[in-house]
Length: 203
Image (tube, rainbow, N blue to C red; front, side, top):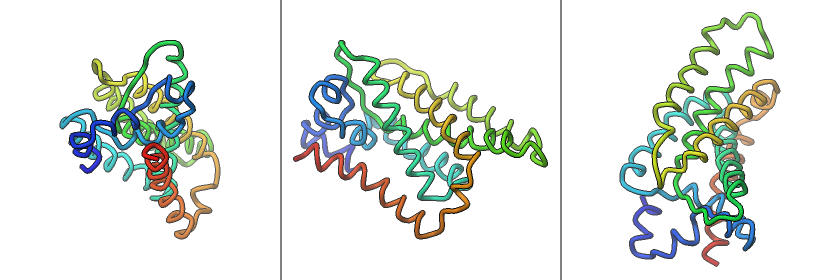
């Protein structure tokens, strides 16, 4: 809410916080891939993005824990922003919105059960991984499209990277080895990355 209303009073916030191919790769403003996660284009996004993040992050947290799930969401969303900006080098490219975090969370949730199935094979039944994966794909097809200023490529990259990361993490024992203290540390780190990005942008 704060980051949505603040640019009305200080329009410069969107300029320094949105993703930009020129800003990231030519001016070295790497923090944009984190600051952009806190921005919303309009009221529709303001209402939809937090709802999606809460729902899909909750589902991801059931697999990986609160801190680890949110940490991966921030990393996946930021990496998709970075990849998208790199793919647009040589042309003016700007985007903003927390929707990449929404689809990163959706991808992680959809991909984790697939990785678990590939790791264990038995006794996990097909419905235990097929239903979440199919549901994630259907939800992405329903919500991931749009027209400018929608960053559709960012949506696609976030969902794809989220699936890959969720699949890979499920094949490890990392989530089970993280205790409550580690989860809290990762939770603070996730928030700290975005806060640090804004500190650098405003500085």
